Length: 284
Picture 1 (cartoon, rainbow, N blue to C red):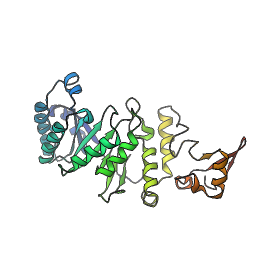
Picture 2: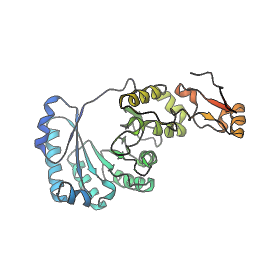
Picture 3: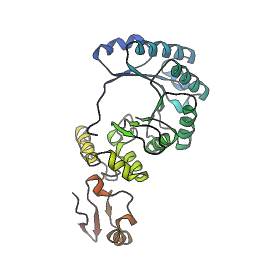
Picture 4: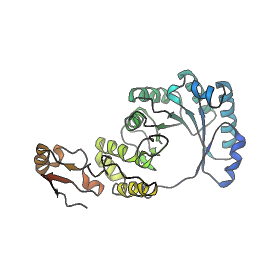
């Protein structure tokens, strides 16, 4: 959202030698990522946990020596052995990593699993916790929300949250329209809607919500896709009411069938009567 500072972050895996390609470019941080599940260790990079831990220490130490922020993330975290995960996260936490990352790389996790893992990890590391959720099973928004409840400090759009638990500022790095590998990751609009429902006054005071439609339209145009008609907040059906009992109640009091107020997002509510579509909200 406007006003948030931008930062350049490099992405690295497996060796310190690869960092020499982009450290001279003046990046502000480095994401160090490697697969820790048995699937990725056997069929992707072929390394065991001893090698992974040793290399992580080497790379993180090198990055820190350059005065640059560093994150260490496991890939395919939810199909990785819990003991392996906690061991390597504790190791990198002790050498001063700025944050650790949990990634649901194949989108297999459910909210209960997310809450349990983040809560457990929060008890064994002192650094920030970033989370990254793919949406293969439609759980990315719910998983991101549960991660925040459990103590995560970052969700993989540049907004700041201290919303649900009183924990200090939280960061969101979400995909506009959820666009990403395969069916994408946590969509910005969907999670904003979820957070607004939990604490609308805070969210309205914190963010320029009227920019959401503009940002989503910009991205949709750039990648040549349409904003889905059922998209949370910005889909053209999001604030459209057609069923008779819904329409009557909405005209009397919009809160009867809306948890989100379209005017807070610079949008318009519509009530469909017969085949005609009438606007009943003065906002544009």
